[in-house]
Image 1 (cartoon, rainbow, N blue to C red):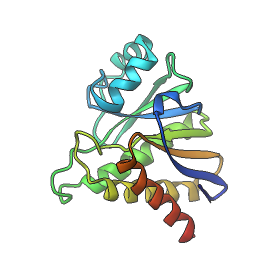
Image 2 (image 1 turned 135 degrees about the vertical axis):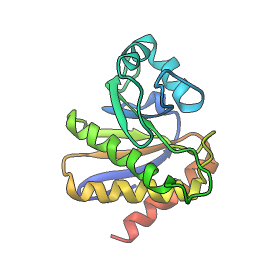
Image 3 (image 1 turned 45 degrees about the horizontal axis):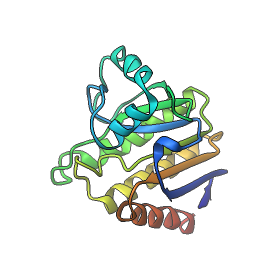
Amino acid sequence: MTMIHGCRLEAVQGDITKERVDAIVNAANQSLLGGGGVDGAIHRAGGPAILEECKKLGGCKTGDAKITSGGRLPAQYVIHTVGPVYRDGRQGEPGLLASCHRRSLEVAVAHGVKTISFPAISCGVYGYPIPDAAQIAVQTVTTFLGGHPGLELVRFVLFGQDTFAPFDAAVRQAGETR
């Protein structure tokens, strides 16, 4: 855990669907109609209300974010963002991944969110190298917090140790470089 511009930034190992925060971020696909991994878990845990709201949103472009209620989840909102499929890192993937985090935070702030949890966007079937994704995610969040006071907690919730360790290291590094 580290403090960035008055906001607690942390990485924890756990299940994002159990997070008691204002909003959780969903690593969605462009249809927003559910999928595997984090997306499937959020839709299953949150129930049909999330899917019904997603159907009305008209999908989502890579790098953008849209919001729904949290359905049966402890979180009030789900912010759906579409991460890039990793090819070689030279097809705009870093900028798109940064945009996912920035747009999710912009949507959160616009809806009065004070506490938010992110998964490791694009690190599953989309193939983004986890250490690179962790650096981009933490750097983007840190930069955003500098210009947007009011957020109290940004948490990265990672399912496995292989994902947790690089995100935890990036959070610790962000605290040291301030």
